[in-house]
Image (cartoon, rainbow, N blue to C red; front, side, top):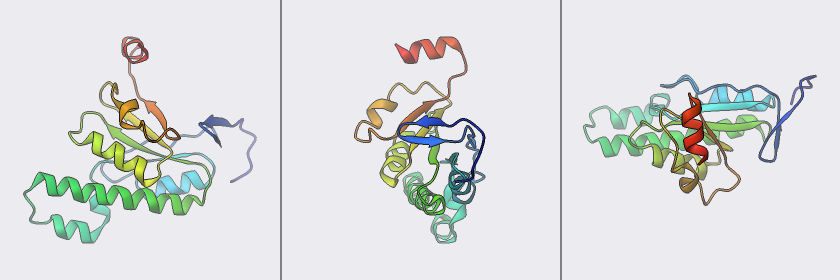
Length: 159
């Protein structure tokens, strides 16, 4: 980790620089960016949307695929690969989050895969994350970071 005069913040047991690299969708926030940010001692974020585009073998398998279920499986394989590659780049430093949009039909599978693959946090936006604690129940070390856009949403989630 780079030395810094910034005060650190805690994400579960991890002390981090006060820098959060947000999840930029459709392949922008993938393993290289997120892992590099984490390696510097901050929070790097992988966006869970369409990561198969970073993997030629998965793109080839998806090329003529019309089956949504098969495409979803390929995306889960890509998500696992991206998380593991980012963690390798980070080398045990910083933290790695995965941004999962509640509005995506397979969000529950993305949350589970992120936890199983070793993500330190789940960032969830695009909807109210009422079931996020249940989805991550078996992964108590994973931090939950909901993105809420108004006071009413915060109050409802906290209830």
